Image (tube, rainbow, N blue to C red; front, side, top):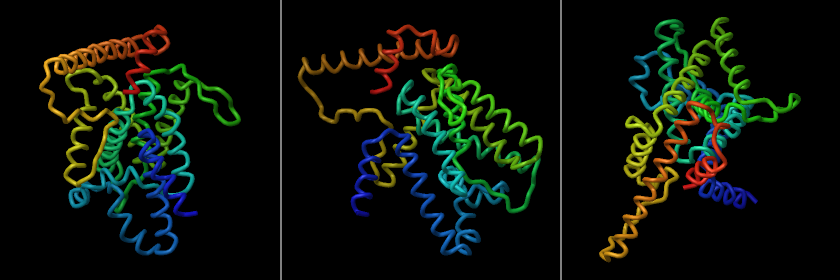
Amino acid sequence: MFESILDDIKNSFRSGHMITRLIIINVAIFVVTSLLDAFAPTFYQGTLVHWIAVPGDPISLLLKIWTIITYMFVHDGLSHIFWNMLILYWFGRIVGDLIGDKHILPIYISGGLAGAIAYILSYYFLLGVVGSYMVGASAAIMSLVIIAGMLNPDKELRLILIGPVKIKFIILVFILMDLIFIGKNSNTGGHIAHIGGMVMGWVYFNQIGRPNDLEPRINGMLSWLSRLLGNGYSSGNRSPLTVKYKSDKLKSMKDHRSDTDASMQAKVDAILDKIKKKGYDSLTDVEKETLYQASKK
């Protein structure tokens, strides 16, 4: 039975969207850390958590720089990971369906990094609580939430006990809650990290299709790290052909395909610019279909 479960998880990871992969990674890490916390609490709480959670103290961060990445895959408690993964699924799928799966991990990583920086700055200038640290994917997820709202603010999500609510109002509640908790000095660093993730989401979206586009830079860095570690990371794009064609006819076909890809990218960039200015609902059916087809490549 357990072997069958493991095979199903492996198949879902290999064939699923990046959102599915992120959820599997987060849940797997949560299971491991929860078991350690239950059966070896002294080791987990006294040692391990301080090597995977991002510290508020900048000096401590210099000694554990990897924590600015690891913290965004670690959660503290069942409700913490449940709500984070639910929000990640809801809003991440919207972003992936509209602008493509290749953007999901770069948005997640950049939002998490911005959240960590915001948290550390808040520690340095506002908090200064000795030994404070942060875990959780909230900042990374908030960057996806903001982009989903920028893409399609009037899309409705059905909430339990409430019914259909437009994304823009859900995001407004998130922002107000963060500001209120910051004002009440309740988990201030964590809520400031949320704001940092939101700001990065706004920056990321506005750079898509421009010279400072973050997606190829971050996916390029992740691919380099993957090769360094001997793994095959894929950003969601099709792998480039490795066969060298000498036929003039095949070369012509390849050049035509490149021209077609460039033309499609130009259309997508124009559509995204229109979304930024007028919103997703301003698109024609043809433009929506073009964006949908481009997101699947």
